[in-house]
Amino acid sequence: MIRFLFNEQEVVLDECSPELTILEYLRTVLVRRGTKEGCASGDCGACTVVVAEPEGERLRYSTLNSCITFVGTLHGKQLLTVEHLESSGRLHPVQQAMVDLHGSQCGFCTPGFIMSMFALYKSTASPAYGDIERALAGNLCRCTGYRPIIDAALSLSGQGGEDVFSSLESATSARLRKIRNDNPNGSLQLGDRRFFLPATCDELVALLQAYPEAQLVAGGTDLALSVTQQLKQPAVLIYTGAVAELNTIHETEHCLQIGGAVSYSRLEPQLKRHYPEFGLLLDRLGSLQIRNQGTLAGNVANASPIGDTPPVLLALGAKLHVRSGNRCQAIEIDDFFTGYRQTALPTSAFIEQIEIPLQQDRLLKVFKVSKRLDDDISAVCAAFNLRLEQGVVTDARLGFGGMAAVPARALNAERALIGQPFTENGVRAAQQALAQDFSPIDDVRATAEYRLIVARNLLLRAVLEQDQRFTGQPLEVVQYA
Ligand SMILES: Cc1cc2nc3c(=O)[nH]c(=O)nc-3n(C[C@H](O)[C@H](O)[C@H](O)COP(=O)(O)OP(=O)(O)OC[C@H]3O[C@@H](n4cnc5c(N)ncnc54)[C@H](O)[C@@H]3O)c2cc1C
Ligand code: FES
Ligand code: FES
Image (tube, rainbow, N blue to C red):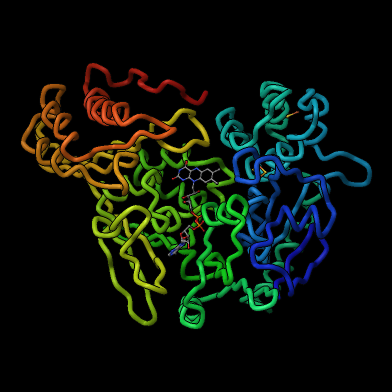
């Protein structure tokens, strides 16, 4: 059984197919069709809904793509759709602003935009232009154009997030906490197909032993596509998002330990504090809806050669703490990717934590090259972690994505860098050595030749960004206002 609030109404679900998405549930079971389906793959934002979860006494409002989120993940949360915003015949301030500033034409994208603006309204009292761009980057509009929509969002700045939900916030938070306390773990089933929500690592271990064929779901932003695009019907899904230990971030003197179910959005503040360059990469990873759900562990475990974070984790020398039964082991990220979409993760194991060393006096540079700035997959992603002493490279770890069947270090280029000055001339040998490290492929995103040229140029760019002559000069094509 799972229990959640649909606005103020409690819903109890027991029998239901494990892969039922929130969008399907809304449109076909509840027949609430305000939430639209466009792409069914997380790309267009037409299906955006908001989920509220207790955070202290308050609620944290986050957007997600309902087309790629399983309904089972709603246990202990509040689901809000565009139908819930109007109250006593009055539009929500966000809806009124869209009307007043002409932010809608055909209206197909509008519910999704409204929900993204609503979550922003509830979470940021005075959003800056950049906050609005970030909040709306996962919503596509094909007829109105973005200026009136952004104007509508800007017009709400400074209104303080007050609305019909404010007076109910602490009562709603208490109701949600009670659901979690009464039913810490939930489940759904249809025939012998199951969706489980363990609340502890020990419960997760027990489920993996009982159901060795089970698939883990964290944010589901990769896995759900196998359902919506390939029409797969997983027999058993185990959701990691309710496991308390996997939702923690620990900071020690030497490292950050990031739980296997921590979303990018929750990780962002700490990552930006310790690794601003890594934090900025997150702004370019998917959209806010994707970052509110997606996890570092999912990005690593799916072992995509074009995942954004593995190159950075390789450059930083991260370690994966994995658990299988009662056995815990640490796997160096260098040893994790064993082949195309294959990893060293043992059977029935899961990533408990990703440990990222905290480093001082080193230079980290991170670059993502893709066709669009927002919500696009990399053609090449590169991360350079260097120790420089008096301008000379004394240690180097270079991580690349998009250059091989797996995310990988450029060991030849690293060797060629060490001992050289970090200058245009000093990196030449390393640029050449990249051809020994990688034989990239041609695909829809880029040709092999383009990838190699870009990889080489990124080394040069890292030099230019460090060069005193250019410091302070914008090298970015686009900067947030
Ligand atoms: C529209 C869209 C845009 C995207 N943009 C980007 C992008 O810009 N850059 C990018 O890199 N990716 C992108 N992605 C891919 C995806 O969002 C990321 O890979 C994300 O990090 C996956 O995390 P998740 O928690 O959603 O994984 P899930 O889909 O839940 O899981 C992915 C895989 O990891 C396994 N897994 C999950 N957690 C664990 C664990 N703790 N231990 C062991 N195995 C586990 C699952 O079983 C599954 O096999 C995008 C996806 C979409 C739909
Ligand atoms: S329908 Fe396009 S993101 Fe969900
Ligand atoms: S108003 Fe038609 S797609 Fe946005």
